[in-house]
Amino acid sequence: MNMFIGEAFVGSGPNAAHINAVLGPKNGPVGPAWAGALTSPSAGHLPYMVVLQPGMPVKPATVFINKAALSSTNHENMTWGPAQAGVAKGIQECLLEGILPQEAENEWCVIVAAWVNPSADNADEVFENNYKAAKDAVVNALGMLPLLSDVSEASKNVHNPYYTPERRP
Image (cartoon, rainbow, N blue to C red; front, side):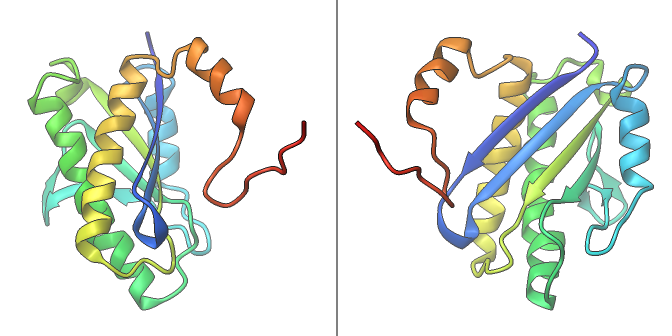
């Protein structure tokens, strides 16, 4: 396959993490999308390469896109600090643990769209939730999860952290 798409939501409250990931070979549709994402900032959304440490990008090359417009110094720090570091650890572990194929090291790229709540208030929770969500999103993408049977069951009770429809008999 040329492109894998995964999603994961981990945690609750203002420190929860919601990750959407698109990954695949650079010579497929993900490569040009990765380059376009990195070079297309917009007001409040500043895509950047994910790093383990300054000057040490993860492999495969990963671009981080914040879904929530940066709204305060705290929100910027939570996004660029613990959320980005959590994504870095999650993506890197996927390669090191063999979740990603070996060729992903230099031949693939990853696009991560990450939700960091502007009200986030616990850096360690933000880190841990983004770490788990990034890893789960990759696992889900490569496993082509969720299964249709799971989607069918979930469609009977649609809801999210921000809205639950009124139940009708």
